[in-house]
Length: 159
Image 1: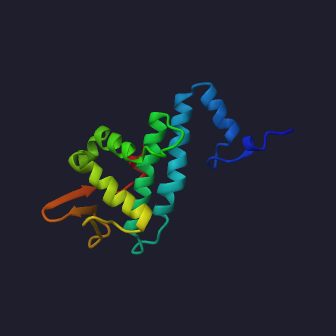
Image 2: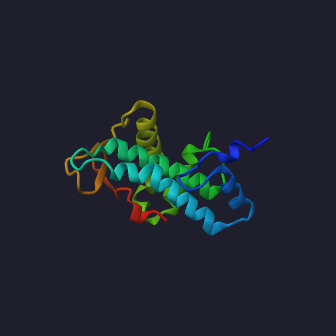
Image 3: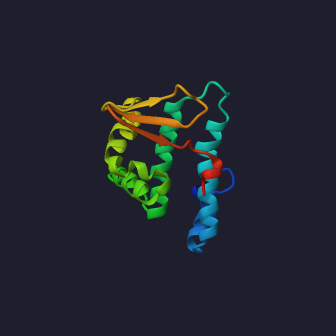
């Protein structure tokens, strides 16, 4: 009987059976390429395809949150982030110097931005996304005085 699960596409270039081979051979460059391509085609390319002037920061931020969790899961070797979502954000912000500004507020970011967007469809706890300058960097602010900058997700930043 054929392995039908092995024929399932995980990305536009890799099927389950190919991924299993990459894993079995401990092919780190192959795994890295697979993860890069999968994230580009699932999260980055669709955002880049949005017509200029119709960008949606909530969608962009939600996609970035999915990327943070997914990339951390791959890096840590987790099969799921169930029960580990907050930990994924803690590890990401601790590890990624480009986002060091969030280190003191990483729990709040996870709770009020990530959980708010993914569960209620909006930020909560006083956090808000500011899109008054749609082509500039995306800002997240926590009243009353803090202002944090988040670089947009872009294919050139993925590695």
